[in-house]
Amino acid sequence: MDDFYKNLKPSSQFQTLFDGNIPAKVPDDWFVLITDIVGSTKAIEEGRYKDVNTAGGLTAIAVANVYGHMDFPFVFGGDGVTFLLPVNLLFPIRSAIADTISQVRSAFGLEMRAGIVPVQELYRAGAELYLSKFRASDYYVQCSIFGDALALAETWIKEGKDESYLVRENEKILPADFTGFTCRWKDIPSERGEIVSLIVKPIHKDFETCKKTITRVLNFIRSEYGDEGDYHPLRVRNIELDSGPYLRNEALARVGKSRGLKYYATLASIWIERTVMAFALRFGIPLRSGHYSLNKLKDYQVLSADFRKYDGTLKMVIDGSRQHREALVSFLNQLESENFVRYGFFVSNRSLMTCVLKVASSEEVHFVDGADGGFAMAAKSLKEKLKALG
Image (cartoon, rainbow, N blue to C red; front, side, top):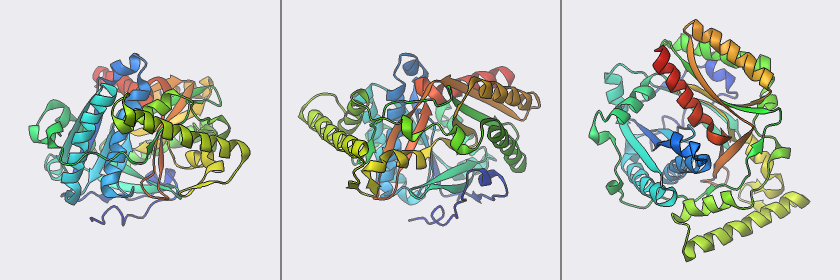
């Protein structure tokens, strides 16, 4: 196993990633893996935002089960996940992704695109790629990705620069393993009125300028919205177990179809587990499941929530008021006029936890996005702006 990422020392706070932190250059024998749902905007506009988020997130659990742990670099973007992976795991991961493409089509009727680009080729093209990480909780260490290599890799994959970069369904050797995927929570209402899904893209490629720009954005958010706990999109008192649609989504993702004995047996098992969870939460009974104490299950969701990240763009899900958002937009407009950033955002009145990954007894991540499209719609806004402004 390549120890490059494992040996990186995590920062204690997200803010310090951009304030004095020196990321490490990704080895040139690594690979970039990018997955996304083709036509995700159309599916979201048809009301299928939860299907898009679920399908997009399935690649993360498939890759995690190849590793056997979660100490590897990945970033969830709403309708897909970006990974960095070492050469020794290239073929088993390629097989897992190939089967995930097939499973996503079968279960959700959605088309997934996936491509794997050698980091060496990106370096030859003049792109840069750096990694750092921070400890979000005792159970989750999150990566941050710097440089312009991901954007270049995405362009190459979408434009078909090299057919060998694309992952095809017929490359499946072994079935993808989705063990550990769960999705059992209702959408979480905003505490202060609005949930903003925000994407901010620095214009300057210079690393120091980029860090200073993102630091300015984070400092403004803190000054306007308050401390992280004030704008965190999840509140324990607002998190509630789902009683139907999302449970069926979980069973569908695991089985690949919404019919047959296996599907109904899986759904029944999920319902039993959900009932035990609800019982423990309601009566404060400290039942154990892995590292979880079920009566404190909601606290774990908040602790390991993946609601802010950096992959060459700053992605955040923020809870605030309309006045907060208007002040933020005004600030970002100023940065945009100074040619420091381009940005896109989307407003909803609630957020959602797409899935929970538990690959080992004490490892988890809870993907958070804005409801009704979140990051995918913010990305659409950003792309339109980049096209218009250049």
